[in-house]
Length: 105
Image 1: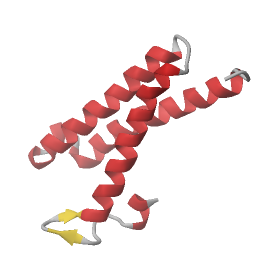
Image 2: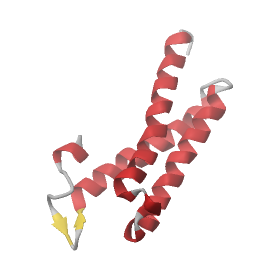
Image 3: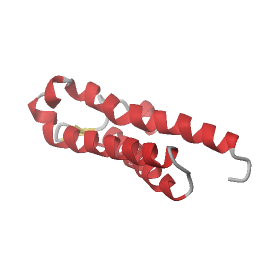
Image 4: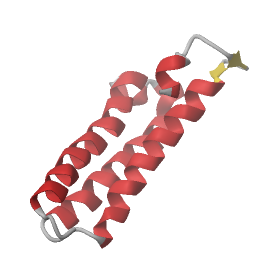
């Protein structure tokens, strides 16, 4: 919600949209870490897919942080943000299906 309520053109300090950046980092890191931590409660093959998606999201986040000033690998900042968000969304769909399909979970 914070990313939507505070877009990149609001509350800018030293060229950085402060509130937007904090909210985005919380969402990106929290989602990726949740995917990795779900390793403990899921069964294969979702167990391995979850870890792969979590690390893919974290890798894209690191690339965004370190390449934002250099064109973000040709994808632009928005393209890399999608590379962070989409693996997390895929994990959420898979994990939701896993929970629905396993009533004892």
